[in-house]
Length: 133
Image (tube, rainbow, N blue to C red; front, side, top):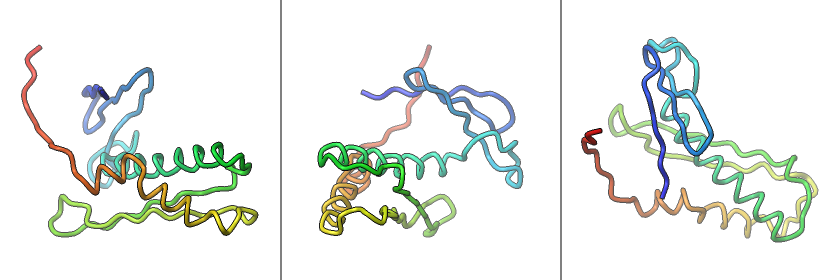
């Protein structure tokens, strides 16, 4: 089970804690925030990119390949169908020049099936409830 606690800091800034990790969530200044951290949408897309990056690392270890430092993951998103919805997400992989061509499609397939992508393809039940402390 995952558990993430998010506590109010100031203005639009919230502090996110999971395990022993911390990140601030905020809005850019042009939206009224203080730009002290990524927006919720940027954090969401960072998770998708991070999932792809971890999949690359696992694949390289499984295949005994070197060169993880030369990979780059780029995540792009478009909004649409209303102001509060991301309508499309593209995960782009920049391969190192020496990466074996025969393994590219196998790695891209694994990235497409990682836990976050699999979750988006089969969305979980989502609920919003009150928790009394």
